[in-house]
Length: 139
Image (cartoon, rainbow, N blue to C red; front, side, top):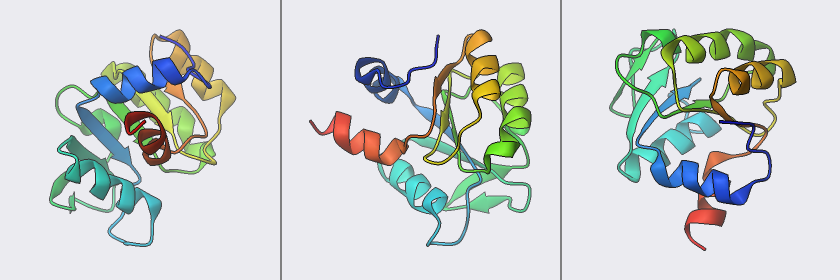
């Protein structure tokens, strides 16, 4: 478990093996990246749950207030929140024993990433899951 950085092999393996994804910051607004990527993941047949305290459902999937509130196992926590929200999200993810934390483009928090990696969670930071999927999974 580690910060995956630019390790294409490790990122592809993560994408290959993920089944249940929690989209943190999921939105009902179609112009939001979190909405589009969640819709893509649902369309690919992944088990998607949302995390947003203002919603209970989006795109036909259940939405929970916090990562800690999501029942069951989570393979990837895909974060669409401001970087300053990361420490609390990482604490929840560590307590939940998630497989990986994926911080979308522009979401950077070195200390939170290091804490997650130290807890045995794979970390991808400042990269778009959708773009990486297109680049690595359709090659």
